[in-house]
Image 1 (tube, rainbow, N blue to C red):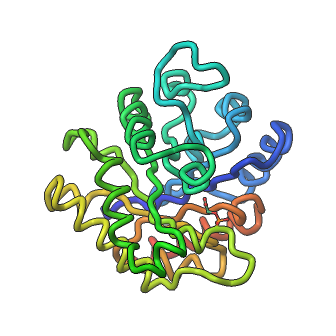
Image 2: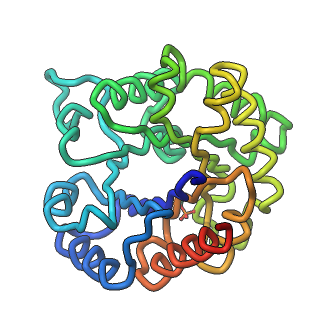
Length: 260
Ligand code: PGA
């Protein structure tokens, strides 16, 4: 069978623990178990523990939005990947908000990817250029640098658990309708696969799941998922609305059914 489509809802810094439980409950009423679509929810750190007990694990998996790269120590205020091992399958690493605002440099992202892998958590690594970088014609160089440092020192076995996401920063949470056209997303994602191929060979590049993220909603999700290079989507704003997120999952399932 083809790769499962992966739909990730990144709730960012929204919702209290109570509101998170409520949203998961509402999603549970609307999203059936689909064998060909994997649905992952990334709530706040605080909500991970209660949700790990409440969710139907056949339907949903959990992701952390971030964690610290050391396993333990005097790192006051941090939560390590080691602590999350029992709670989550995935962790988002290198989200552009963190790269731009929270000191997640290329090296920090690399260390976080390694910490995730070391603790049995699959990293969902976000990669993407800013508008300024794109306008300066540097997009591919930025993607190359982010991708090669993030994957540095990983074995071909480790790579099997890595998910990449192309998230052009200029297309994230845009209220003004600026989005990456499917064609833009596809050409960048094939460039990312070609980089993986250079580092880990053709099979790894083909098997790796690569997602698109940036203002995806229930109306345009199909245009991204239809692209042969795209294995899923990372959804921010639309994942906070259960009608929209359930519809996104439904579209993914419908597409998989049509493909059979
Ligand atoms: P968005 O967020 O869908 O609101 O653009 C995507 C993300 O950055 O996770």
